[in-house]
Length: 161
Image: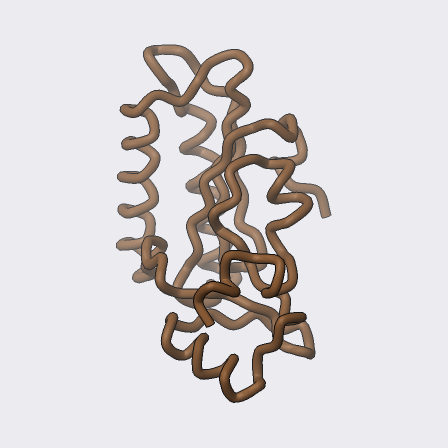
């Protein structure tokens, strides 16, 4: 399935906001629609931004900007943060808790847990160095495409266990 993000260059700057839980289909559709409407009118210093948005895995809101024509300014980034906070409040989801980690279990199902539970699951052997984790700290669209999902041992998550 194609994504609006596919229209932007690999060097495009991204921001990933992980939901504290899986979104329902209705919530995913609402977040995707609202985010796409937001990026369609997103400006920086009165210049339209070449931007796209999508929701991945019913859990990760991604905003992207191709800054080759116009860079996202501090004010435009602040506006996007305000938008995401407002959107989260509307649907009752926190997109800003950076101490929650998402991973795939052996069956491929995605889970999101707090830092302490993540450490506990690792110590109990339920998570291993091969467990696929999601890295919401990647900064470019090319990284999203290549290393957003990677083994725990190859991620900064390994420092958390």
